[in-house]
Length: 146
Image (cartoon, one colour):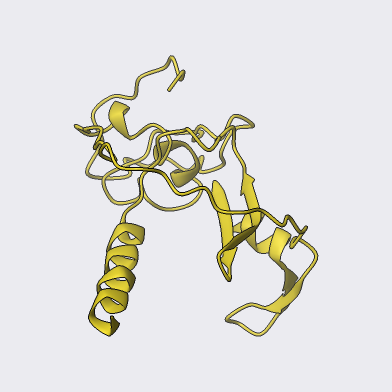
């Protein structure tokens, strides 16, 4: 993480702040609170800078082999879809509107789309939250099926 500014301790209240727009760097216009650190637009900055907000630890992937997935890249951005509210959008619009930092589609053992936004790369540390539970749940289901 190369962000130089450190936030103060997270406030438990909004304290009257109204500036919620993220800057062009993705850093929130006002520091997030405990109530909104994981919500847009704050998540654009906080998910990439968690160590400046909370105690964090790097978890090793272990020493086992890494599987390289074959790639067959496609631009999925213009695929049309319907949002939950029924309005039309494209994948690219939804990724932008939801402050997505990384997007990967694995289909039939091939990476068909891998994109990063907001200065993120494949090597950038990033908060995973419930993604971890979902992956472990899927792997457990596969293991039970075998």
